[in-house]
Amino acid sequence: MKKKLLTMALAAVLAVSAVGCGSSPKQEATAPAENVDLIVFAAASMTETLTEVSELYREVHPDVNITFNFDSSGTLKTQIQEGAPCDLFISAGQKQMNQLDITADPKVNTEGLDYVDETTRINILENKVTLCVTPDNEAGLETFDDMAAALKDGSILMAMGNSDVPVGQYTQKILAYYELNEEELANAGVISYGSNVKEVTTQISEGSVDCGVIYCTDAFSAGLNITDYATAEMCGQVIYPAAVLKTSEQPEAAKDFLDFMLEDQCMAVFEKVGFSPIE
Image (cartoon, rainbow, N blue to C red; front, side, top):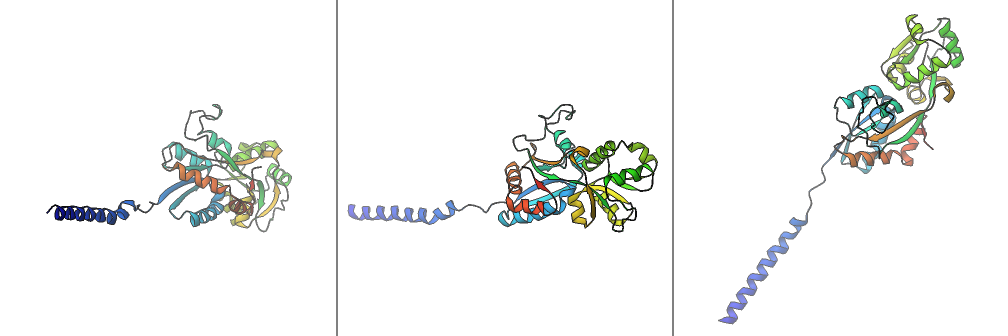
């Protein structure tokens, strides 16, 4: 009788063990990774290149959905300040990034804004400011010297960015370099404005102006004729900083995408349209 009871107990133990073993795969199985939604605010001049870079990133990170908001850096800064969701910010100028960085000079960050994760902030690219003309170039402009002379005698209409747009700020420096008064020129009707570099580019492409000041990357993308390049003496360097924001809901994914942008294959995308890596 004891032998029979022992046999039955052993059988019960084995049955329980078998059930446990059978259920172990279910316990160890992991749910498929959820898609990550990444929001990137970037300068309008990066529209084409970042779109291409995101496609490369998608090949190795199919679980990451990247949504871009391309506009002037000033507009993007304002949207971030007003609470728009953003994980990664890429500006066409240091000023707009500094205005969101608590570690920046308080003379620039006048509102004491603290949005930038300074441990992730990096200068990623350099662009060039160029003088571009319409396809027919009826005004015969070849250099910035020509542009300055024509503005003085009122014989041309030039397109430039608004004062809150980096490309507009670089243009203002060029005008100051030639000792030209922007307000007087605007009142004389020889300046046309755009709210971002794409609007300035469109005005040149459509021939509604004689020339305009835009980045070489936008000129390349639009197939425009570059007649001259601004020197550092004229407007300084055009440096693009990038940083993950402290308000990001996906800081790790944002940092990973930022690191990916610095890889050789991505730099090749940027360089083919005129960007230069920061040495």
